[in-house]
Figure 1 (tube, rainbow, N blue to C red):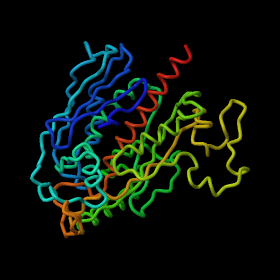
Figure 2: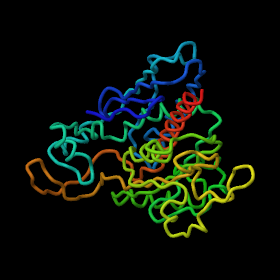
Figure 3: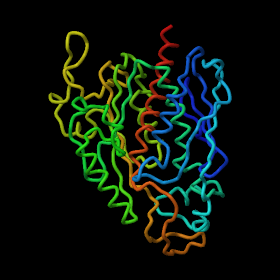
Figure 4: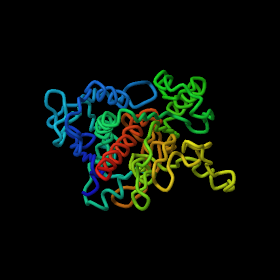
Length: 354
């Protein structure tokens, strides 16, 4: 199976399945001599872990990271950082009913057709639990670029949308509610909607907005390795993501050039930021901001038609522990993937500008 690695200089390769012994990864390219705050790594894992509130999957995993290599006396050595995250609360029997069926909008069918075999217990490598390893890498990436601030939050759930510009938000409120929305009034409405959908055995989607601040000018390349292209690839590699837009995004297509152009100030900053902090694929020093759309979770705890491996359509009801809405737990994943991209380009820039 190809495609288990991401990054160029700062590179993460992940391994493991949702219902195997453990997940894990190998991080290459981390500079030596960085005093890692392992508590910070574990904190990011706590933000992503299941069972943290009533509106997420109730699978109980502590997600404790065990580092195997690449650290000595609390500092990085410059060698590959190996780590594992043990799985401790698998309930594989919850998936026995789908051993011979393919769930709608899951990877089940294409996975088996491509590889000739699949781990039906939680989806194997296609399980969103794989993202735990990404969060470890992202937490380390953040410590390589401490001056760059990366903040993500839930900006919509279903049709409930927060319309306040990010510049007017209090980011300290993001972790004050289980939805991770910095507008507490809107967060309450989102939470109520998620609980209502959960009672129906259904699921719902939403969007996450991410803001990257204090970015130096010059990260990214002008042709294939555009900064926004790599951010888009990173976000679209996350399970359940259906869309990515940065800066003015699709709304920019409705504007005239005279409205959309970001006019310069004398110091090189711009009066507006429709470019989303990136021009010609290269960071311009303004805030980078983008939005990621997540589909509703495909596993429903209600009956729906499924396909069997004998090419028959039958009715089946989902079982097990699943998120009714993935976006609250996806916030640290979005931040992690953004941090990996930014750290990678930061290190590439240091090499090219020696």
